[in-house]
Image 1: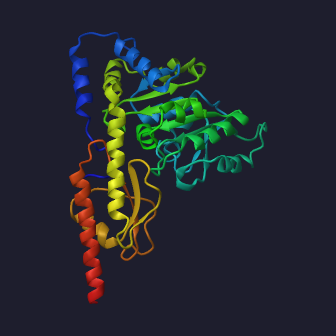
Image 2: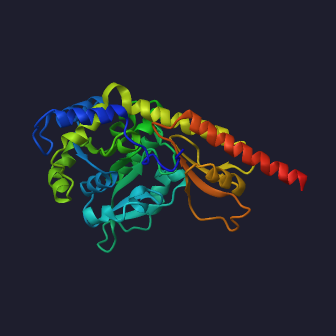
Image 3: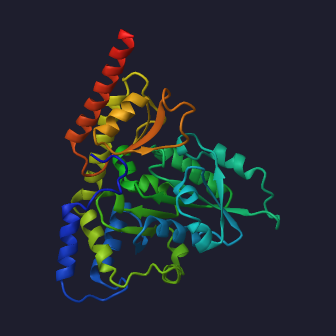
Length: 359
């Protein structure tokens, strides 16, 4: 009953079986020259309806930092939300691999807009050698707040970027959840909206360790083979990453997994939202829920064996004030665990009401 993260999950059986088949298949060419890797690139070109250059890696941090290193010069800046993974959770990886600086942008619901981007750029003297020069925008789909950019919102950011000569990177660690939630074609929220490069994630959605840097502007990938190697992310037995993608992208598994996770999050949110003292901090549009729980409910859930993260600053009076928590559902979240979580929260709320009424 672990709602801490979609990183706590195991692998989907189809992906584990694909790895076993790859292990038993005998020798294959190393460093991505194998047929599995070539097949993944072809499959992604079909999915995105566009020519792509695909580079498998083993972590989202590597995908993000390497992708951005191809977009920005060392004196450049990357505009990203203050809540973005590249800003908060990657230990300076973008700066280490590119030399560029993150230009953090305050954002409602972790979503950039042309207005917030313009406000962040406004104080920068463009062309002034003393100032970091904006070079790229990095946005996350689905966001770190569990919200999702619509195709129209992305198109507006893409237009803003093109008007100012900026490149656009998308951190897609939960890209499948966004596509499933929007029920749109992947092309509509990537290259058609102005995205140049996508960090396409699978690890959080059923894979063991499989991410890929996907260039829609293939000219930007000209030297990427060297960037990946120099950063230590050229995997010799790349077929084992690609085998995961092969299963992940087959028969719509990636979208089925994401749809299940999204549905579980929605079920969980609907079961909590009407309880006294419970509030959502952000709309639930993918598989993350940011919810304020009164102390009695939080204590009961933790005592009941449910795992979830404290989030943000603690309240001034933790004994009486609701605190913020993050709940994450996944491809293998069981409906019975969601229902048990809701039942425990309801029982705690009812007990608190009874105590207050008898006082």
